[in-house]
Length: 384
Image 1: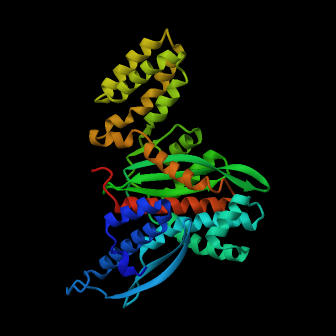
Image 2: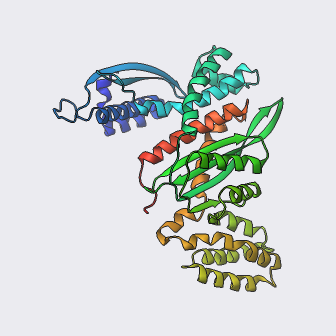
Image 3: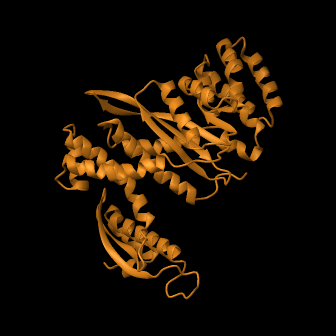
């Protein structure tokens, strides 16, 4: 099929999907990426096809075929060319970056002799049957340079910053250990979400968090008005050391989960959850504190451990009430980062155990970089 045939109508595509099912996936991907690249070239040129305008900055020069190995097989794309040069579509690069990182992680396992039959099969599909350590090293260097630049890019003013951690299994000195993956996400003054940074380490948690947060400051992070996170002990110590005096919002979702551990009877859980939600939904902090005091009093005899825990912890989830009401549902939890974590898990579970920290950092960085770029060009998250 030539590129000119990519004008397939949606109705025709639906018929093909109905007829071929998953077998048409490569063709759908080819059509979507080709269309995205065409739109990108048109924006770069500053003019539509055959349009005469002083805003035109260059001229289209046909297409060049490029075959790419993906998890759904080999796909040949039509890469738009520009007569004056200097153009390469991000649409193709973004879609392939995390694929390359995933391939490299599996390839490293294969080269180091720790691959399973499943990994070997995937490598055969993605890379061909021959994979050498030289090929892996060369490919890793090319990708690592891009990801290193992104991880160390200058930051700026981000009023809201979300912090969270997840864990991935990594081999070190013949042992399988849990490596902490630290992620920071922020909302800019333009209301767009950005991944601010990522770090992976097997080191002590507090030291790792402190170094990570300090690196964000050194890259120019400023204007932080609120930090949203769970109550990780290491994170809290590091946060106080690096961002002393900046208000902290403890994730309300995690708070509600934590509270359930102190409910003495299953039959009480629904009532307790409703009481906590009512406190969180109070119109202001004064009313929330009054409701909290009544709730503590309500449970001091029937669930004394719960009452003590509520009194000592729940107020940490009320900081958000000092911020604009329109923002509160966006900054009361770290649920946005939880969804980011789920996407990382979806991709990393293919690898299961990374051969080293660098391999893990590469794949996670590639996933987060693509996600951040999508956010930056997408809809506004909240309005200041």
